[in-house]
Length: 114
Length: 114
Image 1 (cartoon, helix red, strand yellow):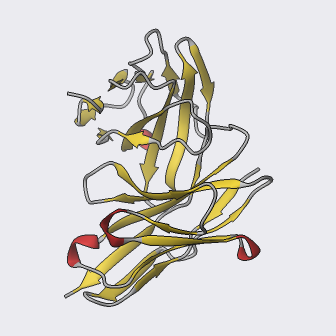
Image 2 (cartoon, helix red, strand yellow):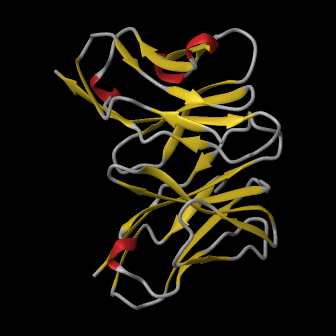
C-alpha cells in the first residue's frame, strides 16, 4: 500500500532494553523525520534525514539513534530504553519541493517503557 | 529562529457554533504556514497550508485560515463545528528558503459539546 507506515503500532518494553521503531514510506520522499509527542509538549523533533545516509539531530536526540541506508526506510533505535522515553512516536516524510511541501505522518507507535 | 505559539491549550465549543483557533509565529523570513489535525489515536493530517497569494486559505473539512502579516497570525476558523471535529489541532511554520524543518506549536485540543 502506498503511504507511510510504522511498526510496531504498540510496544511495551523494560528499562535498559534496546528497541527499534520502524518507518517505511513509498513515495521516495527525500526527507524523513521522527517526532515524539508528549502531553504539554506537542511534537518534538528527535532526528531527521535529508536523504539516504544523511541524518541530523533535532530538538531531543539524546538516547536515540537513527540510520537511513535506503530512501524508503528510517528506523529509530532506543539503545537503552528509559521510562522518560515512554511516548507516542511519529514518523513523517516530505518531498524536496521547498518549504511549502506537505509533511505526511504515519499512524504512530505507542511505546511504554516499564 | 522560528517559533510558533498556540495560546489556547483547550477550546470548548457547542456543536453548530463557530470556531477560531489561534496561531502566532515569529520568523526571520516569509513563512510557509500549515494547520494539521490529529484525531484521537491517529497521525496528523494536513488541513490547509499557505505560502503565497490570497491570504484566506480554504482547506478540507470546511476549515479556512487567514494569514495576517501585520499580526503574525494564521488563525484557523470554521463557521459551524461538528462533533467529529473534536481533535487536536497543530499549527506549523516553515520559513522559505528551504529549511525543510517545520516548527510545530504545542497544539490546541478542541472539545465539542452536543
